[in-house]
Amino acid sequence: LSKWFMPRLEELDLRNVIPSGDLKCSALKSCTISLGNFSDRKAIWDFSRLQDFFHSTPLASIERLTVGLNGTQISDGSFAIRNRPLFGLKYLEIYVDHGTDPKGLRQFMDIIGAPNLESMKIHLSHLQDGDIHLPIKWLNAIFKSSEEEVIRTFTNVLRFEIFVELDGIFELPFISMLQSLPRLNSLTVSIPGAVAPDLSVLRSSYGCIRELEHLDFRNCLSPRPFNMVKYFRSLKKYEGFANLREVELRGCCGLKESYKEEVIEILGDKLMWKY
Image (cartoon, rainbow, N blue to C red; front, side, top):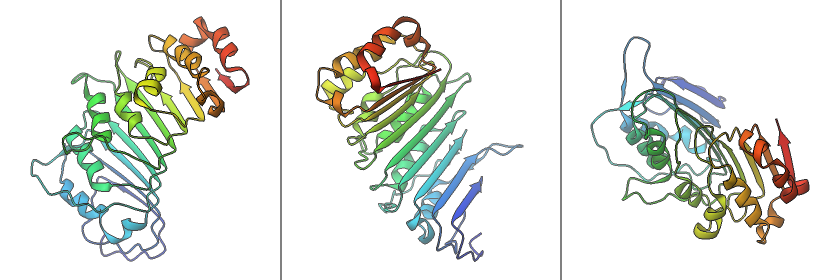
């Protein structure tokens, strides 16, 4: 691939390959890379080579990056993480599935750096036997750095979407997640099988989601749907309620069955209920 000359190429999609050397793609704006296992064998990936690829000249100007990790395992060799942020990166989408090593996910986040990121979308799927805490480990890898697990801060992210498929009931680390996104104004959450976050506590005790304007909850079939009602009720007491312009609820059976009238009364015209 390093020998290809594609000066007008704007989108690059790589599957189970990490290019070596600089690609001749000076106009590149979007990159998708998926790393997993092959049909006939498991693969071990060298993330030092992935670092070289992300720090190569064509990647310096990309605006959109999509990464898929499907059962991704990394080599044991350690390497020095170089601080070379992707300043042009605005949109980041991450797919994690099937027993991916959290260490590799954390290394990936350490590698890219994205100080000007505006939008982040995360898809997690854990529908199999094994470590039931993997989804939490994945999220900690995304939102906490390798250096003493310091919370990463994405100061320019305005839009965050998270989609999680789980077996069983989970408490996800919403505190570190939302503390990482201090300027968030649009939040989309689809977490069937996970406990709904207590947004009221996240706002009052941890200073999260203070600039939230748009909230989209999908498939919140989880226990404790009253967390959402509690949040809406408490929010109405704060100045933040005026900032909240729209609340979309899609397939939220727990709310629909027990709290629908109360939610309608609290939110009024701000509410969009989609079945």
